[in-house]
Image (cartoon, rainbow, N blue to C red; front, side):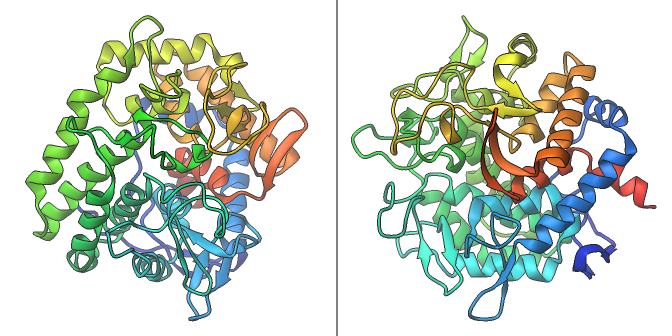
Length: 408
């Protein structure tokens, strides 16, 4: 049901604007509530203020005057990234001005390619870029998550604001973006080993091929939300969105490794256990209860191999990816560092089996933010991109309900 929201005015760190509803796009459950009750109120207050600061600091003006939200909290990236902004809106929409969010959505949609491909990012001067990597040396033609993230971004905004008119206006473009994403006959997103595109953007240097887990999960989530919001707006082909989501729900099981009790990242290159993806499958309801419990058991049993300072590795240590699109030193960046981005869905899965451990995970990541700064990823003394916005927003999203209560 579309939420009719009362906008809250956020005064701190200069974000003096109407804010999006805090509950839109969130996925709460009793285990998460129990986890958040174990987090000290001072930590949650600090995290809220730090997230507001990141969101304010990451804003830069485009040449057309619009505010853009860059991935880093000092605006150094000079572009609006589709996937990063989608996470910001999903997990920290209550800290954003809805008018600015809408303007950014339209800015990204203006960059859609004639074949339907959504942009990976759009620069401050309005140039659309479709693949991760440098503009002159892209890693591929495009990223396979562009379309799903664009649809999810719009749905998050619409669910939080009730702006059904925008959805009616842009649904055809969102559908073309989803149609552009290559899928196999079974509905799963497919990456050809002979013409590799970038997979999920937080592993865009990794050459995962064949049927892909994470991109399929993103596609499922996008179609599910498109079905729901289009039903409310009376637009689009709701039955088709449902059909596509149902196909992924049915066939994602082909990536299940019953011996280990986890999902594989892909079934060709990089046929390896996917920590982030397995947890997301549980979080989205795509794992049976038995499989969800096995995944939770795996995360708890292998906690020391996959979590450092509350942040999460893509693969269990000491594994590295089997095929890369760009050279990445083992133990760094997407090839062995630990990230805060997936805490939003990994911690809830751990909480299914061990609430205290999930709470310690969140306390540890907040402590690391406070002591070392909010970074993109870490590993020992290594860190990459300080003041990384999504690290803050995605952890904040878990504690958002309690953070709001503390403000009353």
